[in-house]
Length: 138
Image (cartoon, rainbow, N blue to C red; front, top):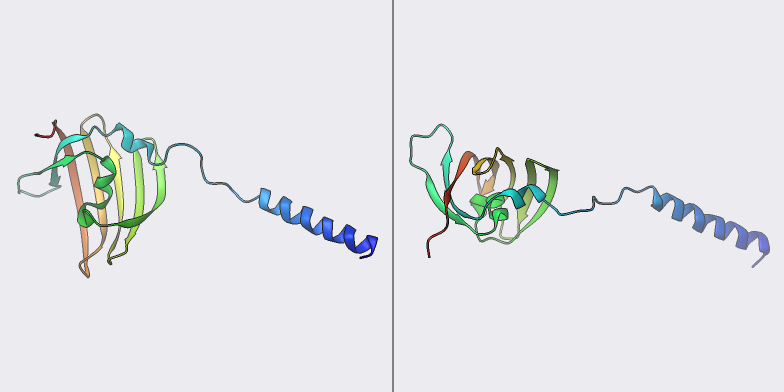
């Protein structure tokens, strides 16, 4: 190899490295930190505007609220927005189905959950209010 050829090769490597340095890195810190504010326990979930009584659900891991229509299903998630009082996540499930959920933290014991997507080959959309009701029973 000639000296000129080696010089061009190293310049190309340096340029590629500089280009990679310009690629934004993923944000550091805890993912979905707002959900750490959500107290585990018994929550009353009620569809907003509905006359039906609230469903009681024991939440041990607040991340389960992201997939209310795909409970106990393995899904991959993509964080759209991770703000101090609001998170938005999209997800796609291996068994079929997908969704987009936004959870707003409105203070200790009050959440607003907006979720829509596809479950069992049909579209769904729900807007829920969650209120903390205490510890889960035994």
